[in-house]
Amino acid sequence: MSAFFEVSSLGVNIGDTSILRNINIQFREGEVTALLGHNGSGKSTLLKVLARQLAPTTGDVSLLGISFRTTGAREFARTVGYLPQHPPGTDGLTVRELVALGRYPWRGPLGRYNEEDHRLIDQAIRDTELEPFQHRSVDTLSGGERQRAWVAMLLAQQTRCLLLDEPISALDVKHQVETLRLVHRLAEERELTVIVVLHDVDLAARFCDRLVALKSGQLIADGNSREIMDSGILESIYGVPMGVMERAPGQWVSYVH
Image (cartoon, rainbow, N blue to C red; front, top):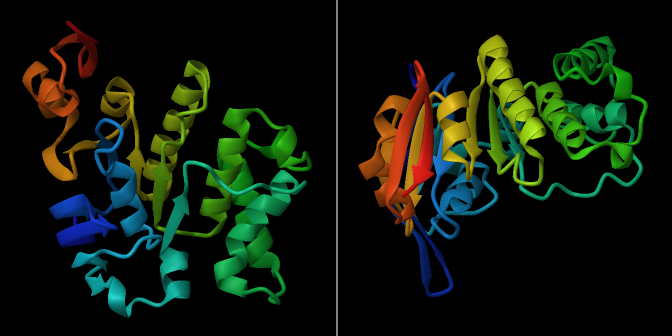
């Protein structure tokens, strides 16, 4: 797999505080990666840099081999979709109207939507199983349904990458699992690159191809579920003694001693 993002010697300072230090990592095309770590470890900051919401203090990031410095804003928006932890208000928009906003990078503020645009909007709604809700106001949806509507908007954008910042933090367990199962399925069906910030290491191990952990602004672990779901590695990430059980082939559960 080729590199979708390449991060080189990345540092981010906010004021006098160093948030990320000397990050060197590649994110490969078509892979679902979880960013793990305790609060303040720098994972959301790294995601914001990848989403071009935050400029690096030092170092560089490239997208498909081209530096962020030379990638235009519209071209970037056509390739990368970002869902922040707290999305903006939807102000009475219906699900279909929200999803249609995903065509904005292709049409601009005054562009008229053509048949292809409507086909892509329909497909995004169908792929996220939102057809029964498409004429409902987003404000009336449950948390899980609302998250699906935002994901559908990114799909309508025809991006090749989803950057998701804690998309399940406000959801109950059932909707957490459903959301991650949806993201994993869409990544496979659409050959998407996905980078998702998660707190729950067990769900990350279950639904992600790769787990990357940060601590105090530095990378401290990077591997697949089998490699990361190890008591010593988890203790180094979270700072508490932890154990791991394999409850079924390829499925691990962690616990605190």
